[in-house]
Image 1 (cartoon, rainbow, N blue to C red):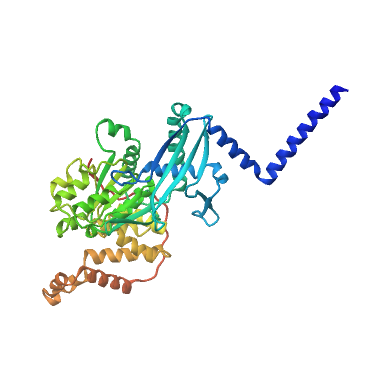
Image 2: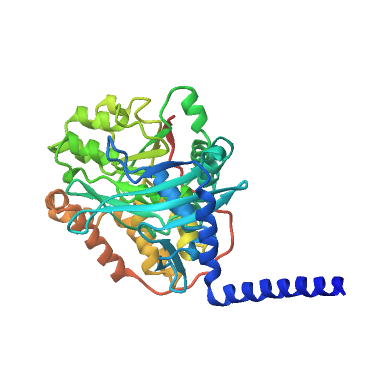
Length: 470
């Protein structure tokens, strides 16, 4: 009799526990119970608080670790249990991104240790944000065991998230500040018209740079690489910059020197660039030929001075010609790699025809080659525009290029020199180059006759800019 009564009491207790648990889960009180249990347990432990501010106190420069913690915290599954969570749309309309609200706490578990993060936000009387920070709360008994590997995990997880969410941006300076917009340039190394060996060499140089942080630090150098792109307008320098940004997934900081007030302004722009970025200054020769508010010494210090100490940056400078440029600007240490971008030749023409028209061989190619061998030349951009305008008919596109090359090598004004004496030569000297090109283009349009040609496949040979020094 006694054992039966004991079993009845035991069964009643089990049923009560089950019903209580069911009630707690159905009503949501289980979260309140868990929170109370955690609070009660914390009363018996000593904690340490570690603060991660948004900006460094001394320099007011952005704290890169704050950004990593933000990515990590907002990726935790326990974010859904927070009292207040912000919902934002992602890159795609169907994507929803969760973000921890101000002054909210989120919990995490690592190697059996329980930690918490507080998203602390301080505001002034006008409700404007003064400071932001994350505060890590960890038990002292767990600190030595888990803190270092936990911080390493934050770095690893945040890197993975950044790679998945990476949206390149281009930053332009205005009024001493950077303003950014999404960078969606389609250029790639595959689409660049460049000698395949040189392209592979440059790609290898860039990829080696990405893996060389420890080596640079070992030899006492800043983890930075400087490139100089030299060549006439329309030869692909800007497309090269965009291709490098896409290859490395680096943001672009485009420095407009006309918007820089003085040396100090240029230095502040440099200090507010981020890691994994390209710092670009185009038309450097124009800057040296015109009056600027930035001194020569200030610019040289910008390139490799003491303030240019931040790691994982690539600086790219472009110019049309190196004539008249101070040799101190081009010395090793300031310029690591110099790449020359020449005008179009027959090899680059074939690559352009392959890219723009899908043509690897054509009956007109020997005629084009003969014209190039005679000394005629145009920029790749000019030839590309002609092919783009006639992309529906490869034959018409090639004939338009032939006519333009003939016009470039034997301008129409020279044909009238025998009749008008020196008038034609005087016309060539006085009329701007852009009008002469327009005149040649109109002649090309008037001389066009429709026709069709067969074309076969052939291997692609690419134009050959050269690395001048490394």
